Image: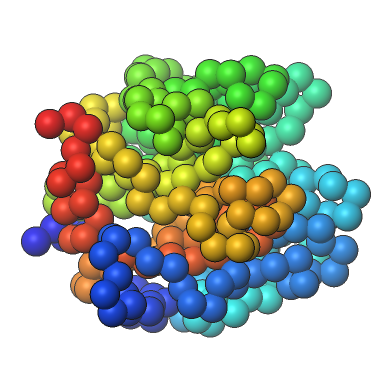
Length: 316
């Protein structure tokens, strides 16, 4: 059996798999868990990040306000399902990720500059005061996702270099840093391969460490005659050399199907951005943006996901 290497989250949100359901990832029956009604003046609340904090949970949430500016706000929850969001904007930008490293909560997000998008990096210990560091790249890039610990003494960041448009450049790379200021030793990780992800791929939640390697959920994009379709895939990366892909599912694990995923500001989007993982039970709760409009949840276990990846391994 596969094992999660990390903390125990005794109060992880959870719902058992529906009887007779065959797939490895299943949706929360109460979806969506966050909508525009959670915050005054919000047009949409979607791709967001969540971590355990205190005796509950904290998060950074993408809120596109009614002017359609992209903002990030903090929220708190006791059960990781029912959230109270603050109105104060902590940063401008979108698609945050969070992880805890050496006692600090690190935020990475798509930072907006006059010259294009960069990957912003900041940290906090209390979700009240933030220290912003140097951007992790030169414009233009998106999907900057930190690993939740140093690897061989260095911070490691997954990234998708791109241009100032929406789609070109579709590959995942990673970079290393000793001090979160200077980044280098860039490595290629993976490209789109199968039809469901052929337009581009990008890292999703903070990678989950397991005894099999790093479990990386990611999004893949298909371009059809009706536009883009975003779905969630998964791969396992080498623990010490995470640019090496050990196993990779040849198909998606979750794709737009429900009304809240298919209808919204951007139809047909499942965009995974955060995951809670309980080492004791192997349970994983995934948060994803639905149709660029709301936040939804899905569940799996480390055993089911890794078994599915290996059964449908693109690399075997």
